[in-house]
Image (tube, rainbow, N blue to C red; front, side):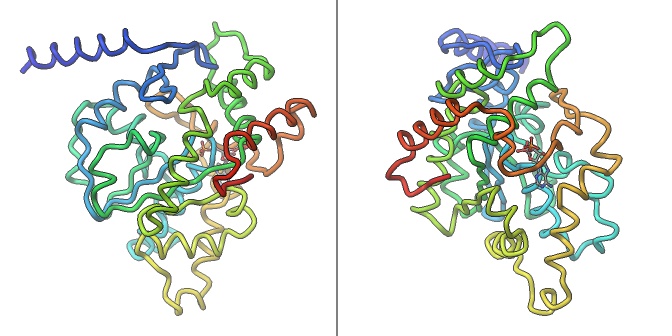
Length: 318
Ligand code: A3P
């Protein structure tokens, strides 16, 4: 009823008033919600996602911090799962942005509606999320659904995020100097930060439940995409047959999903996301080590210290 909706809205507004708030890199806001910094535009969606999402055992959840290879992982997972439905030369990936094919819980599904109908998605449903492990809806953790997490070294993730912010910046917002972005990053104040907590949540889950959570690193994928695509396919229950391997299907899929192939497609050069982000903002350089062109030696040193301090002893390193 509209009365119920009103009440929900009030409860949500009251929640917002209780949360610590900071200015985000792009001039919007971040709320400290359940120990992570949630972009204001995603707040409502995150809460709805937590309240209403019902995972199915067959679901595939792609999780990540922003700017860690999400677009790539979406392209790969979609193509692997649907490879028998279309010949690769007619892949929907050639005409549809990866973010359309695999919607985000925060920026698509629960962004458009508080209680979207997710029943009609073909099985297996593939959804993406930036929500930290600790804050995922219970049904994701309790069901048999799979989670694939991709992370990236924090040096490059920070630089990628900084460029992305500059690109998304509204005209009336001053560009954020890197020094400021760096300071905020070190304090954990960035979209879905702190970075350390985000990666550690999924890292620990992957150690405790290796059949449930696959933990991937962007750098490893860059080094050998074929072996990682193969691993991904097995993990999500769509393994390549030896026949397919012989025919070079894994190589073909890896090529189709590569940065070079995707960034030049018309569909990825134009258009934008419901959140306003232009599709082309998701394709920049895709290099490992681009941070070297931006961070000063003293910034790099500080980041190294932080990595040691936050991740030391976890078995996770960059
Ligand atoms: P750079 O800014 O370093 O170029 P996300 O998809 O999580 O938003 O991350 C975006 C980063 O991944 C950007 O990094 C982008 O260029 C890179 N990227 C996008 N598509 C890619 C692909 N198919 N393969 C490898 N990297 C890709």
